Length: 104
Image (cartoon, rainbow, N blue to C red; front, side, top):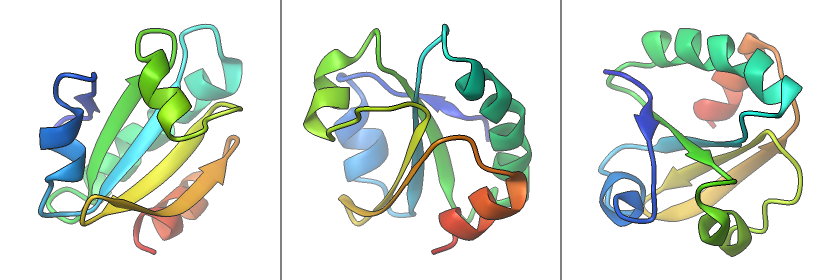
């Protein structure tokens, strides 16, 4: 499964209504740490396939979603379980930390 591109149109279905946990990355194309996190998230997605869904929200395209979840700095990772945010991480993190965060 690939990392999902989330918009306001599919947020409810793909994140809030998901049967499995969803790790959402709030990012932007101009953000250096976000670009560095991209390959890490691809590796994490491969390791957690079937266990946790990974999704990305571009804050420049989805300002309302970023505001709704009070994303002030990027990259910001939010972990959703049963439609609720259960964990938050701000900033670039190594793969091991992202894996631990996703499984929390």
